[in-house]
Length: 166
Image 1 (cartoon, helix red, strand yellow):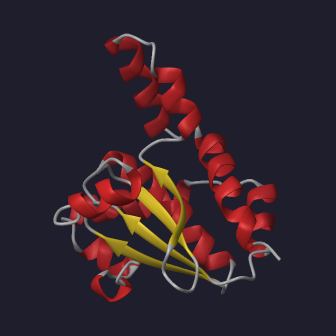
Image 2 (spheres, rainbow, N blue to C red):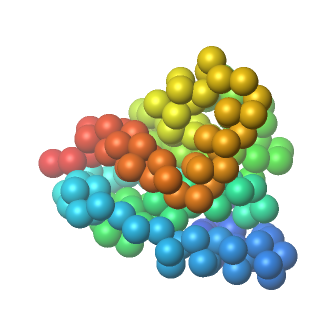
């Protein structure tokens, strides 16, 4: 079980970074577009869902992902978000997901027991990258950071949200 009292709010997460890092994250939140189907699914979440986001404001992959976590809390009162740093939580992340990567989003019921996780990049994208050389992987990561794979993020999050929809 996670101790949510040791984390902090999204706003406090922003304050952990330098001004330029905060600005980059805020811009990402305002620029990220969400599909109607994703927003509709999030609105239909009625069971208590506690999201534990392990993220660092300086991490480019966290910058891409955190708008999704934040938007979910804006669309459903049943969803809460607590942010934790990766630093000092590596062992916990490895125990819960097998790796200590950011961003990681754990989906927990009201008891705080994880029922699923999103780790670093969309699973489908990680699988596509598996057999690529370094240059091809780098090109995919750049495209990911430009938002070209946001539909993959939505798809994976939708799958993880489904048990919380009533």
